[in-house]
Image 1 (cartoon, rainbow, N blue to C red):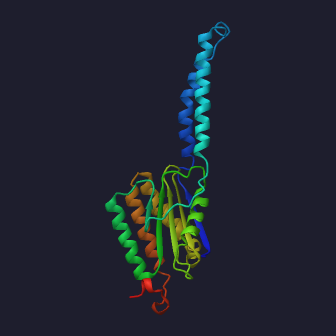
Image 2: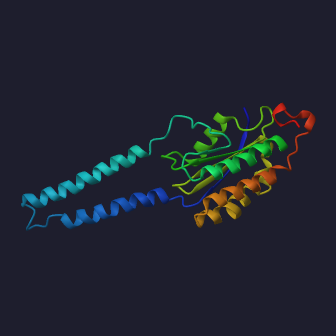
Length: 222
């Protein structure tokens, strides 16, 4: 099993909370409007309307709590790019996957991408580390894997690196790739371009770690 070093950059980290507030604000306003005053408190219709709003609010609260349950299963890997959010077209995914496969044959390094719609209450750190360990990124015994995790709803990106790339943190490469390359495009909703440019920067930086050809596993021997 590889040892992992990590870096995390949070974008719109409060987006999930803000969306929940958007749901609750109109309900709260409506409930306050229907709150019976002293003159109407004994009118059955007024009390029933107010009770209905309260029950609806309670239902939404319980539903939101259910959505935050942490997933217990490990996400299945689907090749080089696992897109559970449907951000990439088939052509985009095929193009990026071909580049990553060719990159592995050239350098022996693993670069994987995981895109999800929502963390469902789990932190991106927990999901990314758990997935990297389950997928055992990198060649066995080399620790040369990198996992890029993107959570769309929360606006979070995390770069998980195996032990051979711990210098990504020390040299500020992870911070530069995420903050300077990917996030600016994401803020403009240019997700496909941002992902592709980020992956290209990761691959270029990882080339500095060279595995001698006579020590390479068969999958990346020429």
